Amino acid sequence: MRATPSAVRRLLALTAAVFLFAVVAAVGAAPISADPVTGTDANGTYLALGDSVAFGFVPAEAVPAPNYHDAHSFLGYPEFLAQQLNERVTNASCPGETSTSMLVAGAPSNGCENLPGSPTGYRTLFPLHAEYQGTQMEYALHYLAAHKHTRLVTIGVGANDLFLCAETTQDGCRSPLELLGVATGISTNLTTMFEEIRGTGYQGPIVVLTYYSLSYTDPAQLQTAGFLDSVLESATSLNGGIVADGFDAFARPSAAFVGDPCAAGLLIKLPDGTCNIHPSPAGQRLLAAAIAEAIGA
Image (cartoon, rainbow, N blue to C red; front, top):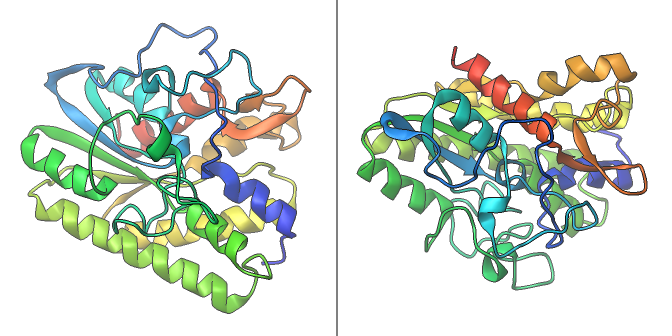
């Protein structure tokens, strides 16, 4: 992979735990709440695991201003999907989560509980959608043991593994050995997640969402996204999971705008006319639709 450090960091920051995020209202959509009581228990429950894309972050410079102390004001694809499925969603995602920090308490993250060079992270400062102690996976296992009527589990994680490597290596994580280490780590951790989730007795679908590209014409962006998504797809298939194609979900509408998801309105627009790396409400809906399509809903 020959992506420049700046290009790598732009894409890998999809789930970076920068602390300055804000909520963008869903324009033109029916009212929806990020409260985990979306839907009813009678129709089953839905557990969402992941990073800042699942959480629904937007940058601080977007309008309106964020309220970090109100987690319900953030909308990610789990909330849109839960509305479509009419199911109760519990979104346990944490901004900056890596596949390792999801499993191992105190492991380096890209801003969930810590950040390179800092012992603090988003979770140490602000509330998550779901309140819990311990790791995200520990919470997931307790949740599934207590909610036997759970119908769906989604996982969106991995980009921060690569981003963390880029931030902590001299060459920006471009050597084959470093990339192999990232790929092996993500694959091993996803395997553990599947084994532990199945160990609770849950037999429903486990869906892993792949990442979109910030550009569908820039070779560096495509190579980076392709590397990460190929790792996710392979590990998911080997463990009997379902892959939801987040990459293609953005590619199709972006094609009408010369491969630019920003111009297509899928990324959060900033006051200066550029776009942030996180999905807009329209982008979040497309990711939700990709998962719904993957499970035949």
